[in-house]
Length: 115
Image (tube, rainbow, N blue to C red):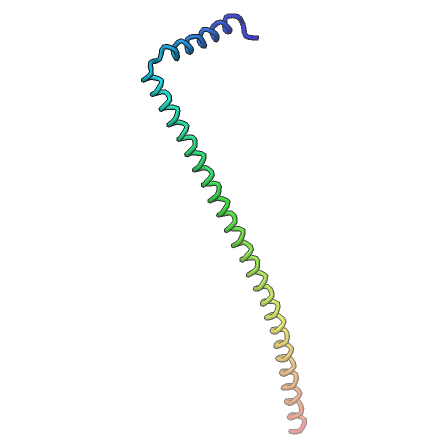
C-alpha cells in the first residue's frame, strides 16, 4: 500500500542492513552480541527494580491501611469513653442540682424556725 518509491527505498534499506550484517567480521558480531546482552541485562534489572518498588509500595499501602484501622479503633474507643463521661457529667449535674435544692429547703426551714 506504500507508493512504489517508498516501497523501493524500504527494500533498499533492508538490503543494505542485510549486507552490512553479512559484511561484519566475527569481532563486530561479538561486540554486537555483547552490547545486546548488556542491554538485555539492563532491561531485566530495570524490571526487577520496578517489581521491588511495586512490592514496597504495596507494603507501604498495607501499613497505612493497618494504621488507619488502628486510628479508627482508637477513635471508636474515645467516642465510647466520651459518651460514658457525658453520662457521668449528667449524673453529677443532677446530684449537684438536688444538693442545691436541699440547701435551699434547709435555709427556708431555718428561716421559718427563726421567725
